[in-house]
Length: 305
Image (cartoon, rainbow, N blue to C red):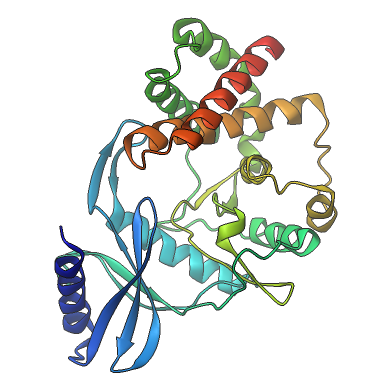
């Protein structure tokens, strides 16, 4: 679809929902799964309008993804985070496709920030710990019935999808060995009650004048084990001493069992990115780095197991 057509459809949907004919949508940015446009009322900017590139998408790594459900979960997570003292954009309005209009969208306040600013590690750690203190248990944010079963089912699906592009992975051998190694996740079932952002990379941490203004892009959020979040933070190169000091964790990140859990949880992310890099964004550099990391992590987990 041409960008003009997309913006026209989105403008009509927002005008219909908010009953204001003076609204207009202007292209701004885009990501892998979502467009991020600016909504104006005349010349006055109202906020950022996020809408999915696809309402439903059949993926190799997560099955069929309903992005209307993703937005509903994101809105719930933002409300929980705001109530829990975690800085996030404020939701101004949102709709799922057909309620009314042909597309799903969420309108949020725009958070000004310094592009490319360094994330202050200690404050980042403190806010992440504050996030993990939130323990929602209502739809659409609810802990899986069995965290370990959820993790292993998702990891197996993602590894099978990534295996098509990783000839160094012996899936018959590695999956069986990884299944045994993944038993360590069962020890975390009782800990898997925290709200997780699941994409706390530098680009999703808004920093201004050296202070964190907000966490943004909560589309990947779920309820689970905080160590899975820390594994993602490690993968993004932000799990440094300052972060750990701010987070105040009583978990020994150098402990053998904890180290294995971090590897298992990071493998969940790298296997996903292998497939995304090939099938969705055509990024050879990301593909090469995540393929190498996937093979390294799988080998390390199997050997340790």
